[in-house]
Image (cartoon, rainbow, N blue to C red):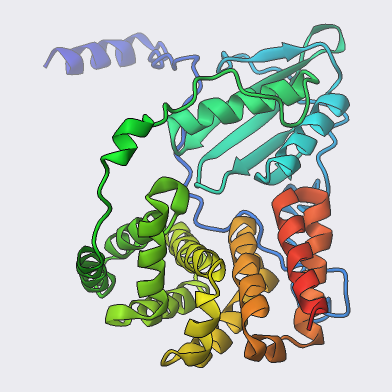
Length: 383
């Protein structure tokens, strides 16, 4: 009742009602990156007529170019998040950061004086350059999503590069403590039966209709097959079971890979990443003892898996929805070419040009992609 009476008094007096004062602080918006960060295929060859060009976000810079900022944007009125002022112009600062991102193989999208970056473990952060006093440049690095501990190292690396300390300056942050040798000697790795039980549970989870359940199972298998995260012999045993398709696990993972490479959402991108990591880890561990060649040639379904995996790997590199996934696909392709004669017969001149274009893009923007493409080309030359 009091509120209505006050409103009536204001109307009768002829005065304008007072507007509510808005806070002077910046609002935070959560952005869902449903689209991939690099949506264009590798170009620069006779395939250009068949491949879509890279999207030019904002019309300012192409994603295949490097980051050169002639003029940083004005400093906003709201406070920045832990800004650092560099006594250099924006052109030098942006060039240093761009070189650091390439050397550390960070996927980046440049739009004016802002760079959106994504690591291979799906940490996403932004780098913004603002005008400082006396021609200086203010650098702001903000985390969008992902691991906070990993972001600390990324922010340190970006600021070291901006200050001119080098593209891969040593980190001063504490590292994870290693397990003492006497404790490692007491460790008993899982038996083969326990690994088979793990695969059986994973196969059940991969048949789930929930994407997050599938992703969890795939990420668990990718960790188990990583030698530096687990006992090397245990990782090798799990890799052998996967490549022999115990409980049809290899075929299930391959079918999920085939289904998700057509999608553009982030969950599908992570599923593709986990599938490629599983195959890359497994083939790398078995390749040391020539077990991979036996599996690919003699085991049931080995030749069919090889043919399908070569085709899917080339498609992932050609589309390049994710540069990190393209690196993993090239790893798988290189291992298949080195260990299977049938794989070499599938790769034609068009597929070879896809790898060549990946190498060209890697020289500009992604060091790891460049090296993986060079290894794949070397394997092709040995045919």
